Length: 195
View 1 (cartoon, rainbow, N blue to C red):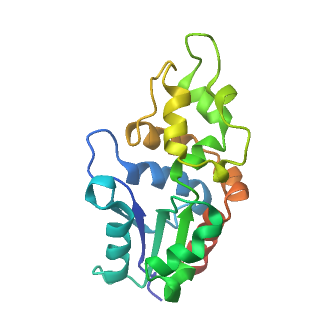
View 2 (tube, helix red, strand yellow; view 1 turned 180 degrees about the horizontal axis):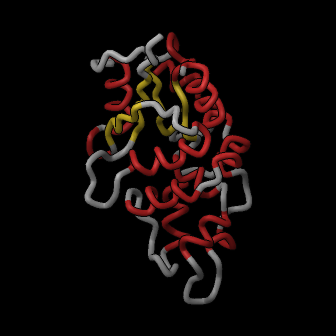
């Protein structure tokens, strides 16, 4: 029996000179999937229409995959999931839709030890983790802006959505991520069940 062709459409900037988001995701997913990786298609970042463009590519699925999955930012609280699925006309395929709640940056905020290791201390010898709001990362609104603010005086400088995201994805603990974010866990389980 031939292996199924699985495509994972991911919201993000393709072909950036600042880094390869696809490679960062492969490194992260490899920790859980051990060679059973889907083909990752970066659907588009903010300048290309972001979530809307990624969802469009997922829906049209011109690459003739056996199974198409999509991973996008929710950009709002978790309780808005159903509304987002309706707005994007994805209710009929919701089992193949996975969200980064509220954004990929929530994943980074959920692992303060990774942020401290990557960014080091600021000019006042404070760690980045000391500045993270004391709430569940999925509940932090605009986590990308929070990450920029808490890293602006760090040794690596302010968080960069592509360059730093690629490096941070590689450093994340995939087991912890699966425990903290149900959509990441469900994405991994879905891919494993399709292989």
